[in-house]
Length: 171
Image (cartoon, rainbow, N blue to C red; front, side, top):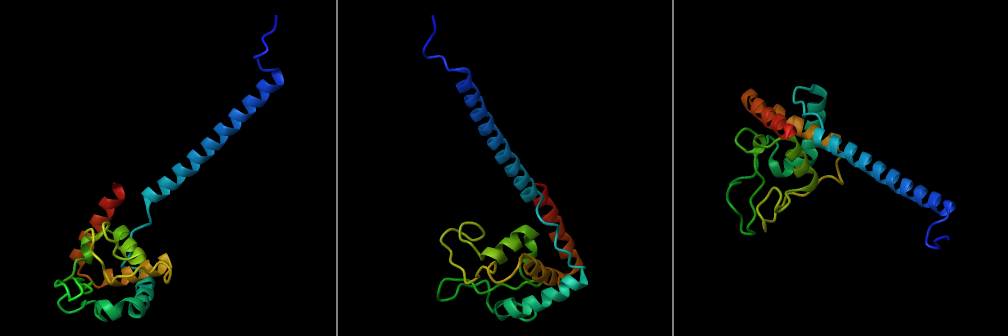
């Protein structure tokens, strides 16, 4: 007596093939995700402020895109710690008197790329005049501008910031 509910051998083969294809697709998706995660975790190499070519390129980028707000000599806007009438803080300096060196490279790249995002690098509800430059500058140009900024810091601050960058990359 045969059971009408039993799949035929051909149907069993088709089901196995379907399961195999789903497993293959899931494995592929997992592999792609794992590679992307590993690349993201590894991050980009640290920005090298001793690379003369990178610093020279960064000086041009800084002069064209950053100096109008952050100052030709990285001095920032006057009274940069005091909110203006619009409730926003003026552009801070990028020299040793500012706080740029308090952040690892990855954070600096994100801030320049995306702007000062509320809730991420600014307190919730805060609006900033800092735009994102990802649509105007390549990552290499952003890295170059940051290399220029870093090249202007005293050696001790560069070492401190490099340590922050290494610690952040290790997390």
